Image (cartoon, rainbow, N blue to C red):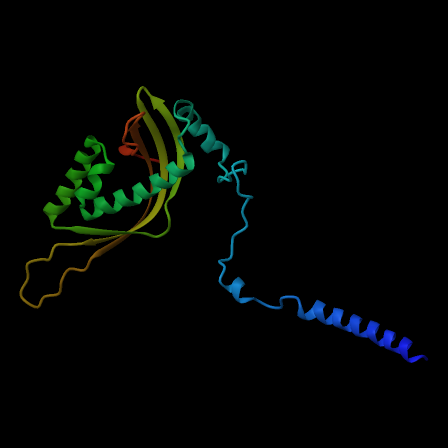
Length: 216
């Protein structure tokens, strides 16, 4: 074989080997430092002004319950309202149990506040204090949302499992006598809470206007 022809063959073989090495070594293998610095992104719809916005699906009953109010107030968002109502429910239940009048006042109508105040005062007269704990997240179902004149009215059914610790007043006893043991009660509650707010008012907050028993 001529020497020049052999050199050409070797050059071709070397080129092929170098190309294969580049394919292997030239690629990134494993996690690179710049990749570690990035925060993993959750899969989302493409960004942009025309990208569709995903909202949680609403069941037919909730959509039907909200239809009347949305006709008067298109900005009414049933999803946000239900979550806000659930938070208000927990705050009000805890506030009533602890006698926290400051926490209750902005969340209740004057009539409901008076009723709660009567219950709190009676408990204080007996010398009792109460602590409550939700055994699980309360369930909230929107049953009605409508406009009555200039008022928006929404009725929510709450189902909850609550544990109450009632601290009894210390009995007058001789020094060294054991303190009264707290009374522990667990109960399931089903109630209709009706919230109200004034349509078009600067204050968008809802207040509790009525509490009624409900079926579980």
